[in-house]
Length: 269
Length: 323
Picture 1 (cartoon, helix red, strand yellow):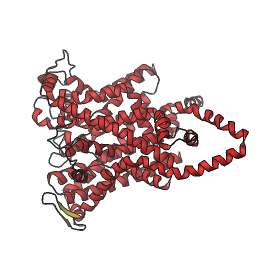
Picture 2: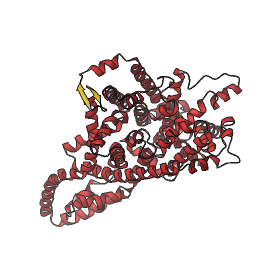
Picture 3: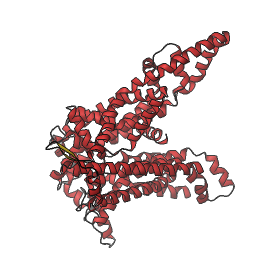
Picture 4: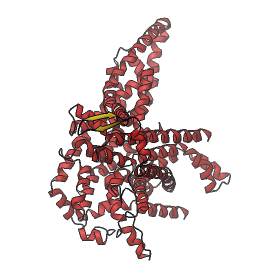
């Protein structure tokens, strides 16, 4: 009996909490008047009017393509450079390495608004302002500390003896990294991939400032920019939001185990 | 983890030759250990790409921000002139900026407390092993992966004067307030938008923390006749201390850099009522092209974030140790 009450409370509390999420999904499948007059009503029968209007506009597909490109290249680059740095810090154990580690950890608490003005100047100096590569390099630098943290957490479970034995056999560090450590780090890589992938996909302020309006929007920035245009038509706004959210929601549902494990690995150390 | 089985194998392999020729093996090991030390510093080269990126696009910009904060900066005319501390003294007398600092701190305080409470509540509710609870746990984390812009716009649609919240209130005879139009309530609404996502994060962390508590502790306490409330106070609460630490830190840092949620929900309005420090920096630096003042704000935000993190980390860690 007590168990059932507890389950009931859990379901009711979760339903209340998840209600905004329900709205994002349900209202994307409803007609405009329905959203305004009966926002909580389930989408029965569902209509694809909003979704097809948004997709036909063409802007969403361009935004999705840009987001996939930026997110994909950022996480690919982060996986490589962060795992190498984590490995180097793990093995070297020198004073220089420890100092570097402290500086990198400081990056975890840094709010982006603090550095965006100079980042724009630095990218301009490198002739990378308002460009995809410039944005990707910055996102990689900004999210690398978290990836390094996760990799270092997992590296602790790789026995030092394993690396020492390989060294004794004459293997170089580069070889050990590729052949011994990287395969063992696969779960960490999966976590880094999902978590930074979701963050980069959802990122708003960085692409807004660093990409500028002329290079095409990511899907998140496009959503924000279209709010003025769609301010009356809730049907298209919710459809746009679902299109922008569906990839991350799907990504999370499929790889949810890695997501949670990575956050906990990053969080507890 | 796959690595778990490996130490034994290597131990065996190393044990073999050294048992046969202990002295030679010892010399060999000493030699490679010495070689190892010199090669160890060389391995740092592998960290170079990440370090260079981080230095160029994070560390150097922090330095430039600090430098700009002592200057009058005009990018349009490409002029930079030293003004000493005057950007900071101007901020001190600026009521709008004081308001920004005040609401950012208030939102951070709420964010440090509420997700801890609700996250722990959800985790305790969903602790029992059942298929329902597993499904709910997966669903409850979903808000954390949504874009803050999506969350802000969705909350906006719920909180408008004729939105769902007020429609529900009026159906039970209450005349709902203006959640986004009223300057004070708008701050509460922005905070709620952020906190909604942070509760999802906290739930995951607390679920994992509860899992790590050995069940026989509860069984022993139950046998001794401890009530459910007492068991929570004496076992659960002390043992989830690390989860409290991490939830509080992540929430604090997210609140202090708050930007996306506020832009999507209120755009900083009404007036400047919900202009967080992050919004103030971007508006002053980019829209008004006053990078000097904006950089002084940025330095203050960075100092505030570092101080808040350091203080809460030391307080919470001390609590972890004391328990």
